[in-house]
Length: 164
Length: 164
Image (cartoon, rainbow over all chains, first blue to last red; front, top):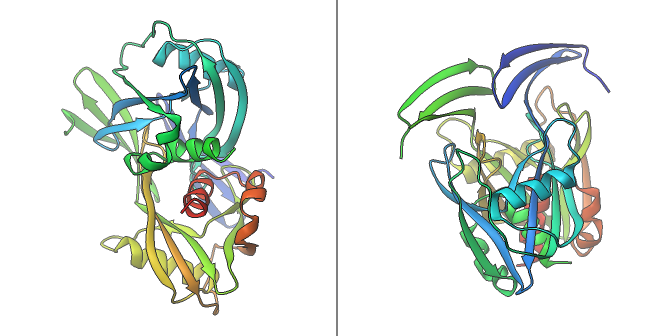
């Protein structure tokens, strides 16, 4: 299925907006790179989360380590790169927990969520504008601490993990 | 916390883009109305889902009934209106299952997810551009059918429900 017409309405740095015509309807669509998130579990059975200030929410949120897939990059390679940069975590046994559209009503962002077990700590390699605090939760506490989470991918990813 | 500067970069119908300056960094933020989704369970213990074509994904997706909160509208009232319009469901016992940012890295959309139990079937009142197929799943099958879901709010909402 493809639209009957399409025009670029906004061209930004990380996002763009396309207006597509489908029959009689027009649809505004936010274009965003595909993205990845990781449920990373270390040898002590702790899950690694990152707390960072999120401008759209105007507050700090606790989230799975995540990022965008670079042009031509394999999603798993992207997730491994993000996990190393944000948390310094390396290695581990990798599998896919799920994939979903983050907001399919208006945004073309598909996200892969990976599980990385037995990851090994190392030095983070944060990007310039990343100011991230690492938070570790014992896996057994995830269920009781869900109320601390306010991010959709983090709730979905951790619940997909605990029900395995 | 508020930005040091802000300018509107795009003004659309359902979305807008703001560029905010926070210290030395600029952040592109998609502005979108707050939204609601509902895990609706009927007296026969079926959950109601909607299948509809999603232009950003260019395919049909199976999702929780959902929609945007209108100006000044209470989230629960919004959810009740959406459930009536999309599914024809009325009444029921309502509670909040969760609330989260859908994509806090670049979008200012906060979503409330409600649980509506013992809802009563009636006539849907679809809007002009809504072409929605109703799908009902026995509650006991949710876990086994997760792989059919490709939408973040639906995965998060149903998993929040089944773990209660």
